[in-house]
Image (tube, rainbow, N blue to C red; front, side, top):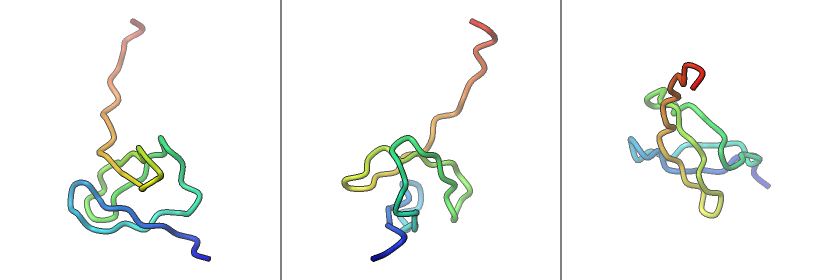
Amino acid sequence: MSDTITAEDPLTGEEIELPSDVEVGEIIDSPATGTELEVVSLDPVTLEEAPELEEDWGE
């Protein structure tokens, strides 16, 4: 049994190895670009570029 799973980097199209216990909403760094990617689905494993967090300045 494998300790990793693979998913496609949405920016480069390369296969990325992820831990088998990855969860939806988890943020990982792309090994190719260093960009933060978010796990949005587990079946199949789908990654999207993570949204930039913006300051709300207490609003």
